Image 1 (cartoon, one colour):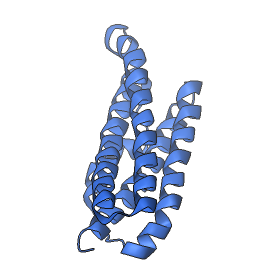
Image 2 (image 1 turned 60 degrees about the vertical axis):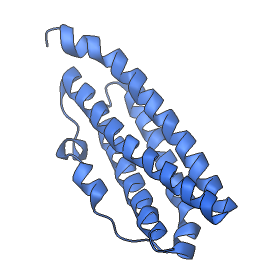
Image 3 (image 1 turned 90 degrees about the horizontal axis):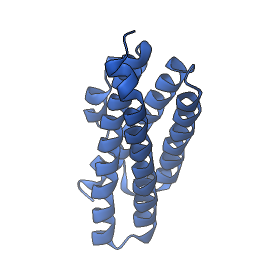
Image 4 (image 1 turned 45 degrees about the vertical axis):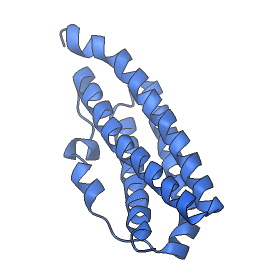
Length: 153
C-alpha cells in the first residue's frame, strides 16, 4: 500500500505526541484534580491506540512523519501557568486531538477500500475514543473560559 504506511506512521506518531502532551498538561495543572486525572486517563487511551496499531504497522509498514512535531507547541512540553495557561493548553491539546481524529478518519476510509476488517475496527474505535477526548476538551474549555477571561489574576 503506497500511502497507507504514511498514515499509519502519522497515526502512531501523533498519538504518541498527544499522549505526551496530555501528561504534560495534567502534571502542569495538577492543582486542578479533574484535569490531572482526566489528562492521564486520556493519555492512556492514546497509548492503547498505539498498541492496537502495532500489528497493523507490521503488516503495512510505517513511514516516519514529521507533521505532528510541527503541531507539538512548546507550551505542551511544559504547561503554562494559571487559568489562562490552562485554557491555552486545552486549546493546544484540542488541535493535536483533531489531527489524530482526522488521521483515523482517513485510515478508516483506506481500510474500507482494502476490506481490512481489523484495520477498520482499530481506526473506528480509536476515532470514537478520540471524539470523546475532544468532547472533554471542549467541555473543560467552556468551564475554564469564564474564570480565565473575566476574573482578574
